[in-house]
Image (cartoon, rainbow, N blue to C red; front, side, top):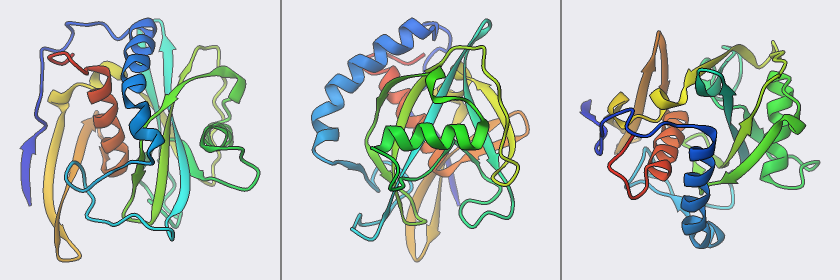
Length: 225
């Protein structure tokens, strides 16, 4: 397996990731991205860990990327899935799941899943936007929704789905210097995936991919954090 650092690392800390900065920079990036998203673009193999063709058999899903406004700085909330789940068991992920018939759209699905998995009420979330759909090797087509949450909040994890809920400083999670890109062979084809180590936790695959994408959007037209 090859290993390399994520490109574009900058001098961390040059720009503080305050809620205002995040909302402003993300809004500007999403405005520029909107025509691409509207054209049903899916991030492809050349950038991330896929060598897949998106097709109608993929299952629509959504995740919420929850940004928590803490006194010490903004964090990103993540969960560790229980070991018995059929999909992505034991992995670190964002709250999310399939888009069900009761959901009006991907945003509604992401908010419903957030409440089901963590107990955080949807009315605590300020939606900042959504990025391109991302395909997964497990057959899902996932819409990542970005939401800002200002405490107080109560967290009550669903013990069936969630083994752990934790927060990672957003400045750490989005610093390109903290990512590593790996290359390996899957199903006879070379693929890449990203990895981020936070404390004793390994964040990789789809979740790391979304953090890499969010980092790229927030530091768009800059030299990095």
